[in-house]
Amino acid sequence: MPTTQHFECKTCEFSFDSPTGLGQHVAIAHGECAVCGEVLENGDALDEHTKESH
Ligand SMILES: [Zn+2]
Ligand SMILES: [Zn+2]
Image 1: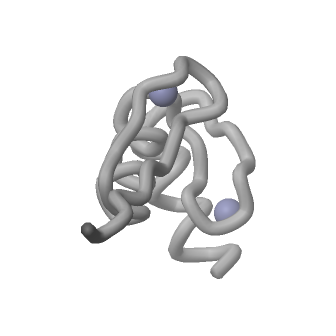
Image 2: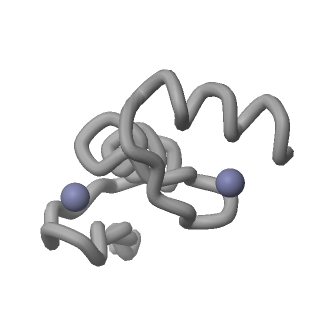
């Protein structure tokens, strides 16, 4: 029986079955960079951060 891995959001404890799902969730719900974990104030700031910092 395969083990289902869960990726849990440390901010709100939502859980996902893939790191991609979790990454999208933290970006959309919390404005948090999926790469370094920095929290930005909005989606635009996050977008800019992702392009410039990574
Ligand atoms: Zn969350
Ligand atoms: Zn980052």
